[in-house]
Structures are given as structure tokens and as C-alpha cells.
Length: 304
Image (cartoon, rainbow, N blue to C red; front, side, top):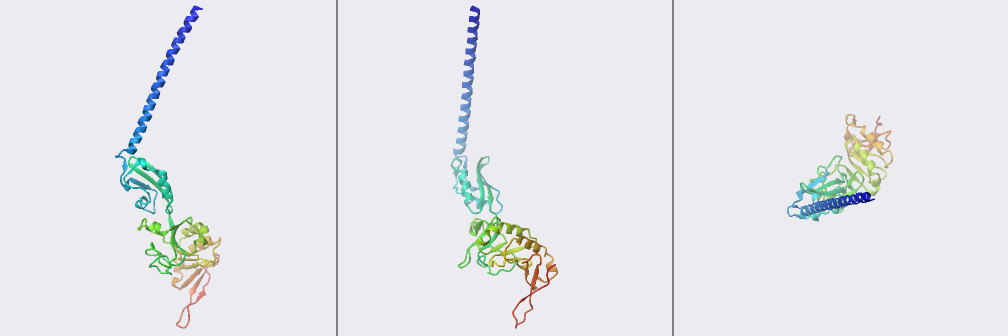
């Protein structure tokens, strides 16, 4: 019994030593962890509040993802005053502010220390057409413009009596023209024009634009002013499509197959191309006129 008692006492002492050693190690580890966390927090606080780490100029804001608007134009949309401490920058708020602007569909903003500044990545609403309610696109442009791109389609200011002018993206999102021209006067505006009430074609615009962009024949204008006759102004002349319907894509495809038409007939003699029935397209030729007779159109043989 004495031997057993002596062995048990020794084991107890050994275990107590191990526990004390384990406690010291845990205290030591906890101390180092606390020191490391405190050092990291102090470093981050110093880097965001140090006078040496302040955004001094707009050029320290890096812009990525933009194709239409310039870097300078997008920087002008940020509600930032300079110099600006990194601690005062709220990336999510800046992103929401950008997304509230018409030209920007989505934005992300992040801080970066090396190099010091902000990185802004944007997804633009890329304009594909100039849209207006009437024929006039802007001051200095005639109400009836001939087929072809305008040499300087930049109607930044509206005249009295001229319908409002805006830009459309490929999904039918309408944006005020001045939102772009005021931000970047050098931005190249789209050549395609759309005329007519927006409500009349907004729901169809996405599929309509996809058909137009695939056409090998240049299309300069699409007019919805007459619901009974959708018209196109193209490099081949005016095209009548009749009421807009599910066969519009076929009509544009048929137009694209007429690229050789200028080699077969003088386009100046054509009043318009009739694609009301894309299976049986035809030409309407201008009649020969005299001082006593008014111009009239006569049908020509069907295009094979």
C-alpha cells in the first residue's frame, strides 16, 4: 500500500507540472496573438489616417471597363472632393452613386494601397441609336435628312418645338443625350437613328436592333411614325416594311441579299424598295416627270 501511495503522489506532481507548463504556453500564445492583431489594426489605422496616404488628385482613381465614356468623364461622376483620406472613402456608396447615373449600368469601387488610390470598374450602358419623337434630330439638322450618317450628329441642345432627343442602348433603355454630351463632348455618338414614339417600339427594340446590326446593308434610320408602314433609310434607299410584325427579321435578311442591286439599276430611279412581303420583294420606280405632270411611282418587275 505504501508503494502504491508513493507512485500515485509522484504521478500527481508530474501532471501538475504539465498543467502549469501548458497554461504558460497558452498565455504566451494568447499574448502573441493579441500583439499581432493589435499591430495589424494599428497598421491599418495608420495607413488610412496617415497624411501621407491621402488621395490627392482625381488621377489616383483608376477607371476600368469603360469603352464609350472617357476616364475623366467617369471620374466627374464620383462625389469626391480632393484631398480625401482613405478612411473617409465609402466604396459601396460611391458605386451606388455611379449606378444612379444614366450612362453607368453597374459599378464596383475598391480601395488599393499600392499604388495608393481607388479602382473603379464600370459596365456602361452603351448607346446604339439616337432616338427622337419626330424627324428632327437636333438644331442645324434638316427635318428630312437624306439617307446616310450625319457628319456631326451631336444635338446637345434642343430648340423650341423640336422633340426631345435621347440615346438608346440595345435593351431599349432611354438616356438623355445631354448626359453624354455634357460629360464627354468628344464622345462619338451612334449613327443609327430611331424616329417615333418610344412606347410604340420599346418592348420590341432588343430583337429589332439585333436584326438591324446583322444586316450587311447599312441602315441609317428606322421610322415608327406611321404604324401602318415601318420604313428604313438605308444605303440602297428607302425601304417600306408595312406594319411591324414577326417577319421583320426576314425582311431585314432579304434586304441584306440585295447588295448587288446598284449594279443592276440606278438607285436614283428608285422611289422605294417594297419588302412588305419578304417572299416577293419589289421596287417602286420614280416615273419620268414633265412640267405638266407630277411625279408618280410605278411598280417594277419583282426581284427574284
